[in-house]
Image 1: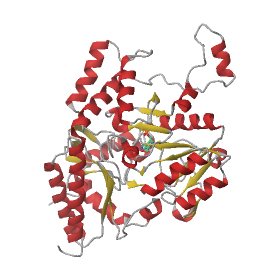
Image 2 (image 1 turned 90 degrees about the vertical axis):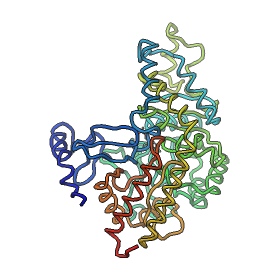
Image 3 (image 1 turned 90 degrees about the horizontal axis):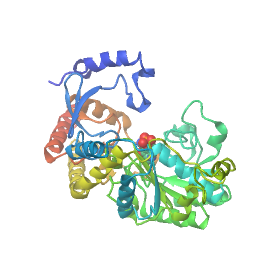
Image 4 (image 1 turned 60 degrees about the vertical axis):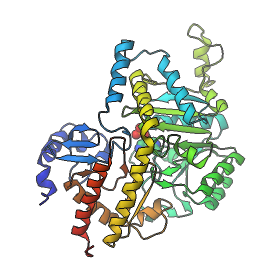
Length: 456
Ligand code: PMP
């Protein structure tokens, strides 16, 4: 029999008691916590994680999608070691070759990124994208979608996971601050839009066309709820007409829904794209790229160099757009990222078809137990959504699904050695094979037979 979770994970409990003496709540990011305590891992390899009690799990969290070649990939590891050994240092503090090499590679898959900059996280990438848009349009307000995440800062931590009761009408959502300590005037500067509702978006955007400088969107919400084709093309058109910069945040979808991201699937050219996660091969990274004339806002002032006092004068006079970062374009990280892309060029199709197989088999399994379920997702990411609705179109649809049962299933799966953070998505990697996927389906079978009132 499968041991109770508390019994299996005693070591995690003890670890977390110690961790609480070091970090608030024992975690260094609140999302890493779940009740009653998170499972603490000590080893990862390929598709597997091992916790401090030596329980082994097939990992579908894949570090929130960041690992698309699994844990400890040999090629990625070699690329990092090679960079350090050949270059001698792992941080030049000057321009270097890998910045160009990675840039050209990205432009192959994301031709919309005519020029680009590197950052250290997806958060920093979306921050820079917003500043570029404001500088380019001269309009300070930003628009985002209900349920979309772009980073934990004041402008964007608005209506990411609001209680639907507080969040206004479906076609005119209210901006809800998601954290204590956020600046109310910054929150008021953010306009919230309903995803996959073109008519309502047009109305809101038109009414505030003189204030809104950019519209930022996850073209596939949270990596799994796709925009309707008509919606995303309509959004492209209306933002162009109203003089707003359209930003595709592809931090999660980049390389994961397709090598060329969601923009390659929809055949839409955003003005700015942000990337992160998978393209860092598991190391911290972000990228911002887009139209030349927008990206050039961040170029150094003309003719300025360190010996020219006009450079400092120019920045204090706000004549240039400030963008900096000690670690931007970190050589070891770009080496890891380039190695990752090379692997994905050969193997991403296999990951996508394995994901499709898992989705189909899971839907069949749920059907046999008469639990309405949809495996919603694109490419290598999906979520198990317990609903009999035909389509999940946005945040509120998702809130209306059976999250309680989903959570119960997820906890049972942990006992079966299938890992994702409860209620989270599934992200596959090149390290997952049919063996892991078939074991996963069998584990689901056992769990559903336990919780379902309908024997299959
Ligand atoms: N944008 C999206 C779409 C994301 O999914 C995330 C991370 N979950 C971010 C931005 C922020 O990226 P990071 O955690 O690297 O700062």
